Structures are given as structure tokens and as C-alpha cells.
Length: 110
Image (cartoon, rainbow, N blue to C red; front, side, top):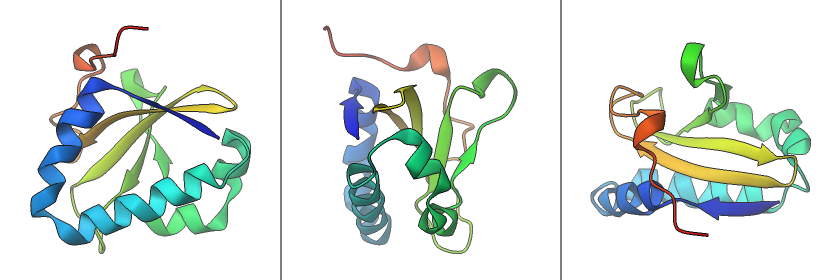
């Protein structure tokens, strides 16, 4: 599966330097994503359940998230499938989605 990075993701991932365990978890999740052939395979992978992979609700239902904390913490990787073979890394939330807004996701010029 291919990954699309956003400026918002790149800016928020910088804060993970202070959170070494969460940074390691992010690397594991990215490895799982890279080794998936498409989004359907990723969704059906039993390993992603360990990282509380879930679809967001209501107006954010285009997005999915992974928990970067063990034992249900508040740091989440937020992603959005663009198509079955492309996954957008949108944002890393440090407050269980409270600091995430779809309109504030900044994209690189294409």
C-alpha cells in the first residue's frame, strides 16, 4: 500500500520525539501498513485490532485511527483511505481527537 503524507502529519509527528514508546508503536503500525497490499487487507488484519484500529464517527467518518498508546491512551494516528491502494497519513492527535479537525489538515502542493 502506498502512503500519502500531509504537512499536518509531518508537523505533528515531530512532537513524538518526547514520546519514545509511542514513536516505536508508530513505526510498527507504518510497517504493517506498508506490508498490506490494500486497505481491505489492512482492515481485516487481526494485528491492527491490537492498536485499536477504528473508524471515526459522525462528520469524521472518512477517517480511521490507530492508538499509539498502550492501555488506551490518548495519542492517536489518524489516517484516511484515498482509494484501496493509497492511505493518507493525516494527523497525530495528542488529545483523543479533540485537537483534530478535518478542515485544518494541510496538504502538500501536488
